[in-house]
Length: 265
Ligand code: NAD
Image 1 (cartoon, helix red, strand yellow):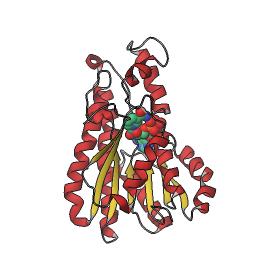
Image 2: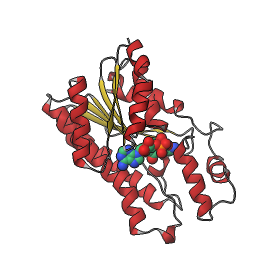
Image 3: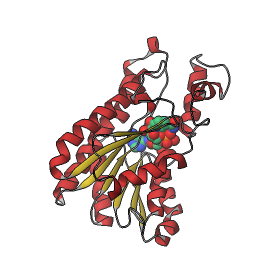
């Protein structure tokens, strides 16, 4: 019996990268998982590719096309999941974006884009998940994706850092407000994880003159990782399944660092 057997979970940003890995790890332990993403076609393919895995473990996989900054779309994603799985137990607010710019060049558009998805998207995701959990009688778990950029301000990615600090404060505010409904709110903070997001960030950092050749920025950024290497999504999922399971029931308002020892906070 898996740690999350029979639990109905939504993971946003699950068409690839960390979100996909979170969803697949939940399926490995018997959960019912909605893979949700703004790239709906890819989310559908990921759900289809995982249908056997889900069946093997007594769970199910579905998908949703969602822009996490749209409250209507978030509500529709939750309604679809509840229609298929009967309820919502765990909501991962994982969708995120980054668009590096030199500090002095950061524009309102850059700020609004990054804060919109990472900050407002997290708030809306928490609110709408909590409304569903309260409507079904209370109880549930909300898990937010923070970052090492939630703990330190890095140059060239100022809006991203601000948005990920926002994720920490939303986790704390939500934990305080939702405790009376038996809903816990936690988060986890990866360091450098080898995903397409980092490939894009690496390219962007070259474009703005912050690095000279492919891979250089990632290598420089990762030089001080105590565990001696960057993470893969699989390094993250032991913790995320724990945060979705009853084993973490007495935790709320906390962020778990999973960064291989980059930031000791
Ligand atoms: P990724 O770019 O590989 O995947 C992100 C997914 O989110 C994509 O599938 C994308 O389509 C989706 N998405 C983007 N905007 C969306 C929106 N408005 N609505 C719904 N879906 C949207 O990124 P990743 O590396 O897997 O990152 C996942 C999360 O982890 C993000 O919140 C990111 O900030 C965070 N994180 C990543 C790293 C890292 O090193 N990769 C480190 C710390 C934190």
